[in-house]
Length: 258
Ligand SMILES: NC(=O)c1ccc[n+]([C@@H]2O[C@H](COP(=O)([O-])OP(=O)(O)OC[C@H]3O[C@@H](n4cnc5c(N)ncnc54)[C@H](OP(=O)(O)O)[C@@H]3O)[C@@H](O)[C@H]2O)c1
Image 1: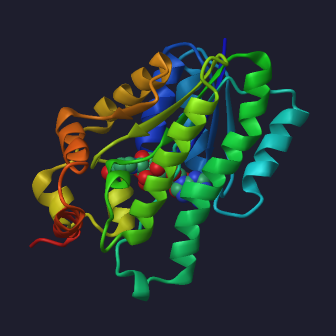
Image 2: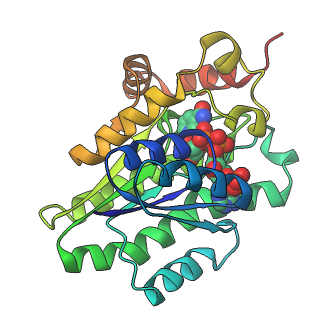
């Protein structure tokens, strides 16, 4: 049985992905900050007949990725599939955003994801087998006024993942960048954009459906996968439209609506 490490597995897309991997007979290592929610998820998924280890860890702290890798190495636990899913966004004009929120988004969405990939990729290459899934967002395809840092972190994830996927082609290891659009999880409330046109008027996708798209994409070894045909169309259209127009529309969807 292979072992899958999923970050951000205490809720939302990560939790649904964990269920899918468990149902398909993969052992799990579940990581997030909330130990109680992880313990609950662990009990539920052991009931599906797989082994589950839970690690309560704040991945936004500088040495977290290294600590996690070293701990698993000491226990001789090989990770066959790495799912870098944990991430968060924050609504607000950049000039008024606290340094803590800016640093936190960069640390979690970019630094932890990059460092975990750097740690777990070489052993996969040595085994000539493995999969990495980086969860970006359709936000990564255009600038995002009112969520400038979040959108930029996701642009990084897309660019980084596609580049590394190319570097490891023919190695037996695949890197998949998975891009959900608005999805019905706790994300929007936490980001403060649950009153935005995007979430209130345009609507969010069902989290189980999104996770299934992600699961299929990583198991097929696809380099870039966008969840939902509507999201795919919007993401593709940004490549042909004038950038100022794309940016103005992006602001409009992030604005609150009554
Ligand atoms: N929902 C959307 O509309 C949407 C759209 C596009 C992309 N995405 C992306 O999809 C991924 C998952 O989002 P989601 O919608 O499932 O969000 P969510 O429901 O808020 O779940 C986020 C997960 O990340 C964990 N997490 C947050 N901060 C962490 C930290 N510092 N260290 C470790 N774990 C942390 C959370 O657990 P704890 O709080 O217990 O730590 C939780 O398990 C994110 O990368 C997000 O950017 C979401």
